[in-house]
Image 1 (cartoon, rainbow, N blue to C red):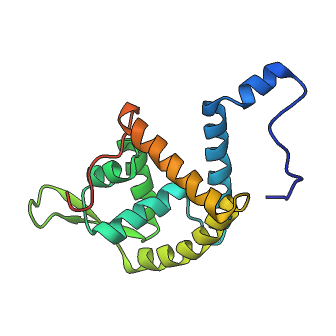
Image 2: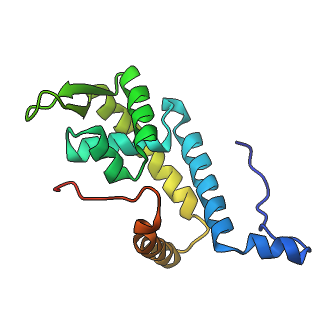
Length: 168
């Protein structure tokens, strides 16, 4: 990604300014920026934000069903299946029969997956600092608190909400 001069998404056209100031537009654009920055930061290990999230969940929660992963990370089932397939093909996750019900399959993070996650955590921390760079420490804290409040408030209003906890 090449560095460009920072520009506000505003123009001298009031009609475009109206679009650029809408919460949905700003949130979509912020998501786009965050994803691009993460992908660039993790390019050396070829890990996407969704793949990082799945590895993170499996690392902290332990083996679980694909549906369990989807619920904790807020991805739809088909996207979760694709992410796990790609991670398994790379040897970062594996599937194993559930010890409670051999008809069910659990997803586990492998040693290679844990290694990739440790590497990605370093890149992700740099990316986090870059994302929050426009803010003072106090502004960053406020921004994250308000963003978490927004997400919590609207979690149930989405096609795919985050459901449950690690202990559930």
